[in-house]
View 1 (cartoon, rainbow, N blue to C red):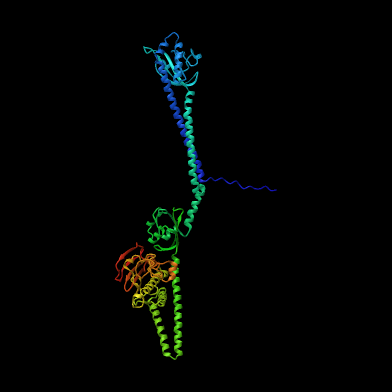
View 2: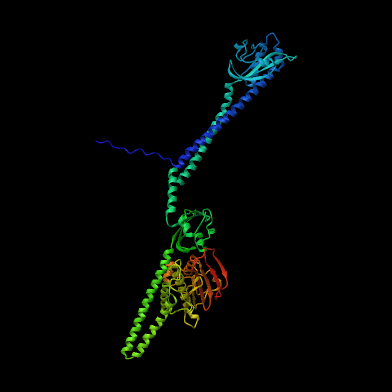
Length: 586
């Protein structure tokens, strides 16, 4: 039968609260014990001083008594002084009163057998006329005693008087205060122990019974986890001050320097983001724009109102891909619509041929072909950049399907290869695509108030050292009071089925994202905000103007400038018709 191997004993790890409890109990006990010892020494010293004063007073009173002075010169001093001395001893509570001659031979003593024997103690100073005290061991044991001289009329020493208290009697006097002191010390120790236990019980609950090493490891794991996750994490206290901000959050929000301890409102974040963070309710998957990124925000409350935890996910790349996907979907829908229309036209041509109307069939087919070819030729000839050309052709087909005429101005001209590498295709699609989508929506919304059909005019050309993209519509335009808010996230005046405005200021030009699919995915009011963000990212500017409707102009530098602070100006700027100019260059 093999011996069973026992596991090694587990080392007892005391929790932090337990260790602090032991330390605090030891400290409290040491303080109480030290206080008790000091109090005892102080009381003992006071008691001994009181005993010295008491025996001194008794000895001097006996020595100054006329009866004593007369008795010491009598033939038998003991017969007179012994009863007197005993009466004084009993009345004053001292241990002994001894009267002796100048040679130290006792005339009185509490023990009669000691009368006639030599006094045990020092009497030299008394013979010299002084009164002194000492602690000496005599016939009654150790005692605090005083020896004083008895002087006659000529101030000569004729006898000596000694009064004293034994150490045992002094100790008996200390017994009461000492017991009281011990009781007070025990009570203080008990109260301190109970208070320490309650405080450490609370600490144990807060530290979950973990020891210092476990807490240290937990902190290290906590820090490593916070800085390793790719999502942004921000912790706020109940006053909305930053308690913790990990590296991903700093990058997503564009924060630099020390942010811990600062109010979230002082971090320079967009107003919409600050309002969402400062609100009382939780936030779920809400899209916000920072200086250069699109982030998805989630918030939740910590405990019972201790603060809030914010999580941020980078949505910038997904937003750009969604924009490209929307453009591709728009192209697909446009191609489907054109295929449907082409089939209808083909049926019409076949029917004309079957009816023998060959001339009319040729004229009908060539007219439709020439119209489509003129638009394609104009776009391809003016815009050599393939991304912009494809976008314009797709948006033209989409606009035509919705009953809006999209035209390219004659001065539009962008040669292939002119645009620098830093102007990415995604940013160009974001800027021009959202401008056209919003212009088409605005033109349709304002068609009821105009006799002319809705129209959107696009200008795309190189203007000096800038790429100029301008989109004008025939809608109601943007009200002057809404110019500053038009590029804010959530600004929109798209109307629901009941005709009520959903958000934003007056005017038919909204900040939405084109068609309903984009609104459902990204939230209302992101289109023009994304335009401003893309312009800011590339060091450009956005101008809001007015002609027949709204006129929005974006200028992007071909040579990326040095990053500067954002600002806002007033006036049309550059001779363009308008309400204001919003400079969004970083």
